Image (cartoon, helix red, strand yellow):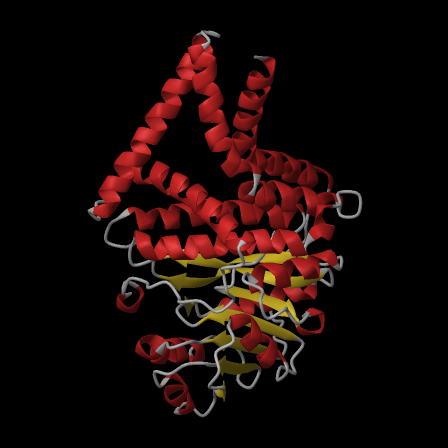
Length: 394
């Protein structure tokens, strides 16, 4: 029975630490750091030559709005170079972009995936800094200025922008926005402690000289690119005032495809970033990487069924009222998640139900992603998730 209790309490601890405890620990560490050392604000007025690279695949319905948004970015004339790479597009996206003379278009008929496209685009980048963003997002006008100012710090090897999910009209997929708000808070804390732990592809930047060509089969190019820079001793800064706006997935089925792909890519990344698990070589970074990412992709999802099964075992063995109360809480949580799923199928929005549903949904997707990874079923090139039209109407 002692072994069952150890598994039970360990599972609860891992779940708590992965989703709440890590944030609390980093917040405390940041407060201690502020006590001993105050950071100096970065000055404005730093406008180096910069290249913006946008990978676009069959984005004809939205690409004009994306280009107009890009051309409207507030940056000194002649300092921002724009490259759209459209490999594999068959819907006329390259022809639309060619109608804008100030935008460079790179196109090949073959579709080898976003990673291969970025590697090819980087061969044309001559500026000291490069910014990547997705074709289905819109940037705020000050985004480029807010990103490049961080490079005045010589320790900065890259910059992670902010991702903002526009609230949809209903459905559990809107919980994605709640998830990203929490992630944004953790990014602020991570960056202040040392470094953001992996940038999001919607908007991130790197020093061109530090870019390392990524293997063509890599799924999460943004994550691996940024963390390999961290492994070289640099930090990834966070620019919450530079943001990319995108609509939520157009349904829970589309969000499921995206989450499973990300999960498969997470396991692939862990297998290729083994050096970051060495806490003696990267003490702070490894703590951040393991606490914020690795646990969420490995032990935390496994802890959910373990906590439930061992809890039922301990209640059946009449080990005390504590276990009965915890089991009641778990049953209530899973009941709420089930109700959230039923409501999601009817596109009904009610946070008390769809938040627990989305939490469970993410963890189930991790299991699916793991099996897809071990079977090598996830390709770098994939069918993108369909988004709601909310963004176009903002």
